[in-house]
Length: 426
Image (cartoon, rainbow, N blue to C red):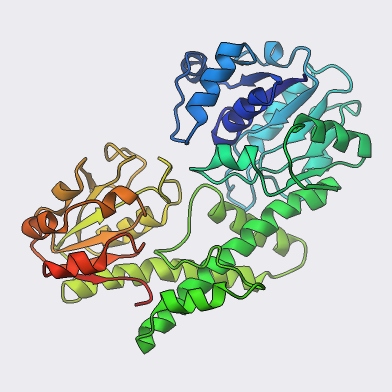
């Protein structure tokens, strides 16, 4: 059993801490938010993530997981310290390292010699090798161990990962980090810190290019009245391509893809390379938001001003309550800017808080969102939307056209009661 300190209890840190405890380690998670720490110490998980609350309760009950706001107490006796602090985009287009630097400045005066400091936060390429400077110490080994967690399936992704990437300049440091994951049957990529950091950015960049590509193909399919589902199936059966991330939709977003792609573009530029390929994928994504708004506008004669639009879905994907950089929110912003009255429903969003667009109305019932609406736009793939009775929706809507950007609805059933369902790539 190892003694592990996890600095930061956000989406990545909390998942990592709970899973490390599940693997049998003694874990202390540290956060500066005292109220959050008190809640977590009682087993109150503040984010929606399948299975995470169960693991937190398990760790607390077994005495292997604890939470504190006292950094010195949290790292006392630690064998490894994992940095899981926020790294949002700064004004220059790169990840903001202020939280990481602040944590390192404090840790430098607290850690025992030889404690491995591991960066799990997504950071600009080259950051891990700068950690000794941030820590003010050269007797603390450092390593990069990027996370590849998908919101909604983070626990599953952590305990059954596709790969484990660990980068350090000394093999024995890599071995110490890999040992933390003992018990997991996983391929291990052992490399240097810079390559490990690059794996994270390159993976996300490749995935978003696939998503942008399939949305561009869907647009072409619409122009020729081709069925994008058949096209994607034909592509995905090619072993060189595969079916993953080839499902058209309203665009990509979330807490990682947008910031990581922008950061990689900026990093490349500073390294002397204009990453036009990735810049094009980002531009196609922005165009996709506009395309969805145009589809909604077409359902009401081309002018959204004063028109009531129902929206199903605000989170960037089903299974999470996270709507940071959500394509649904980006589209809602554009609908409101075009003069539409927007009423939304999302199973994970209870009210229109200050982090949602001004003027948006949020209701709890998807049918209530549709009352008097001239069109309905489905933006998140919650399965519960597919269970709504189309007859009830048809009775309360003023219009007869639905734009289903996620393919959630049973088109035959909805059209059988006189509603027209339009999608992406059809």
